[in-house]
Image (cartoon, rainbow, N blue to C red):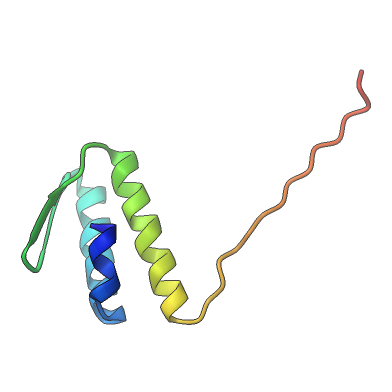
Length: 77
């Protein structure tokens, strides 16, 4: 479905995001939106779709994605 979201308006993306989140939290693996009926194979696949959709909405709203840099130091002992 992520290939098809580029043609959606921001409000349509938000509507789809709402449907995805409701489906995920209710335990459903299937989401219907417009002419699409998508069944996700796993929760992680649905989480990735939600993440991609949120990033697309944020980009359309002019928000920058966060990047986290983590460092780990050790004294070698």
